[in-house]
Image (tube, rainbow, N blue to C red; front, side, top):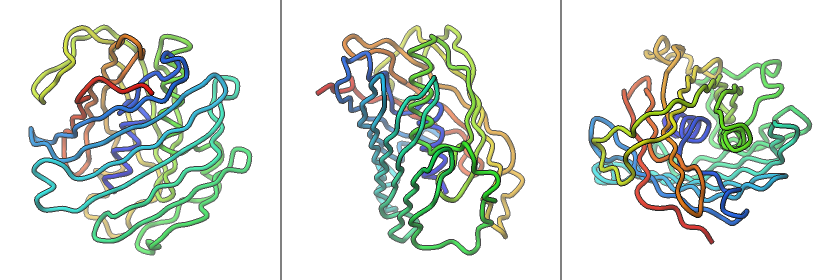
Length: 262
């Protein structure tokens, strides 16, 4: 599902999110435009707060630009959890809205290191279930984002890995860096110039469609990168993210304005 890929990449490895702790633990809201093949197709907003002890994140994704003429999509996701010894301990993840012609909802709760899907509507019988034995220590997409941002703030690096479970798919995410690099241009960028670049790779491990004609592409590793800039009053913010989607090709996510702090 495209939404899961976007969240997992956006916010596991980079997307709409900045370093909220640098904003004195205030709420931060950041708005992004999503482009493919140079066309604006989606809008994404991240509203979040990170503290020394925990995090709360809400994201919304809806069709924008050219895509909004042909497709209805409106998805809202939330996650909350704690930071424990350099790791995240998710408490609850919920995602719901209209996508692929239907209203869809998924809720995951956590007991210790194990996620449990308490709601999944509608069910997807054409998808292979993720084995329960592979779910231990996995985290949701937004908690993975919180882990990356916390790691960048504490260490100045983005080295790390996580198994990410969105209720349907299990994906291995690995990030490394940063390196010094200028922000690429070509997608209506407002934020340009020198940045810290974090590279990442996402690879789906389980939860594939049983009859997918794209199975080989779905199983392959997909690289990406995020560029962070230090925005006064806020801290490090992902101003641009690039990643490869197995069906849609190169996706570019661009920060559209200075994030709001409130």
